[in-house]
Image 1: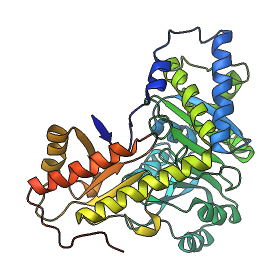
Image 2 (image 1 turned 135 degrees about the horizontal axis):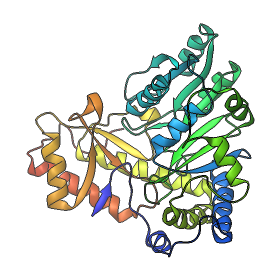
Image 3 (image 1 turned 90 degrees about the vertical axis):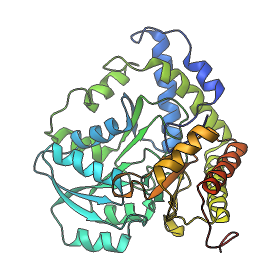
Length: 368
């Protein structure tokens, strides 16, 4: 199967093999070596000197951990959203009693730092700002460096969902002033779902000491105290951690700048291929993601039937739209290790599936 969804993604064989090793005592010295190796590797990929914690749970778990460990009920939070997952961040904060103010940009576009600055200037009581770096529901990447500068200049806590960007797209936790950064294993890290990661700056730890939102499983204070002795507070996903140790070595050996360049090349290839088919890209070119490409479903084509045909007739799995974009777009994932032939095959199958469905492009050849 050619799995071209924006997570989970295909896992390289060497990582699969590592994940199949026998279990070890998670309170023993072997696990201590494993978690320490992982933590050092995560810090390199995060490009941070801050604490990075490995949690057992989905990426949404790390988003929840980011909220409950830094905020208190009644705190004013600005949620800056460009899609489904930005909205989810706000929903988590609301569920725990934060007063959430919302700044929403049209889906398919990125955050405008100038509008963000104007908004923050009018909202002095905001304690934290929630930002999604890469929005997989729309295929858009925010300019987090510029966004982060606005938030830091306003002296607000910057809490980032980097689940579909870290390990694939340029990311500089410390240089960009990110206080809390959440990530998940099933994306560019190239391992199975089940682990999430959270970095905490000194400002974030200060906020943690004041936070009064309820927490138990996601308590990063417990996670930090156990990590200091080479353990986790709760039973960890050991098999996934085996794979993560290998994937981190692969990323670091390749060189992070090379990883970023490789993802840009994949994004360029998919966007060009989609244009050549005669389809219209959904995300604005200036902010199009290099981990997932969003594409309009052409008029007269049923999204469910097209994606079903690709799966059954060509063994290619492409994701549909989410929320208000359900049935209106499709999303082609290209993150992690993706052989060039898999992208070529996916694009060729997409063209064949559209031809079979009677699609007639309004133009031929790539657009400028």
